[in-house]
Image 1 (spheres, rainbow, N blue to C red):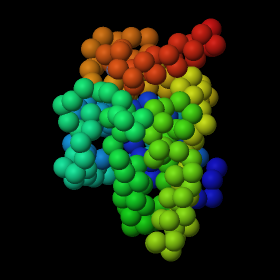
Image 2 (cartoon, rainbow, N blue to C red; image 1 turned 90 degrees about the horizontal axis):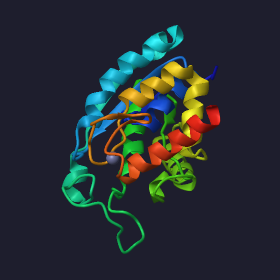
Image 3 (cartoon, helix red, strand yellow; image 1 turned 180 degrees about the vertical axis):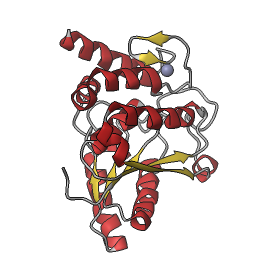
Length: 235
Ligand code: ZN
């Protein structure tokens, strides 16, 4: 058990942030969640959040006592000042700078800064995010150095000792499924398969072995490949 007073988890309703939520519930005496409405093309992520929050507490009696307030923050200004495939109705494609246009510049920097502001008021000393450098689209604001620099900047700027924890930073998607298995066994893996949302196109559609989604967008492909690898190793 950690000596921290509590953690604020950046919780979007996807596979990664749900795994991070379970990771935090296993460690901290009080866990709050924060979600951002930034004009995503598909509000499905936001719709699955309350379902996940309610169901995850049923998995472990201690988790039920530790999970506290959920905070939804309106960051609609992101979609007003940026143009990306996540916030506009345009096709997903690679840009000249080598980043896909699903990259929302500054998003994680802003999310962490807003989360730190909220954690300050709520007396929470750990921020938990699902950023991952190993297996994703090369988003620069998911990198370990970015998060470490941000931790320093936030603490300098607020005179705090906040810790930024990114438990998935060095895991690939198969290892993220394995972490869920370790934290909450098959019931947590099933909850993540059935109720989290990852698909960029916002499709729920049919239930695949790895969960709902279109099956062909980059996020679905990554999730499906990781799950099959995980399931193959577990078999
Ligand atoms: Zn998809």
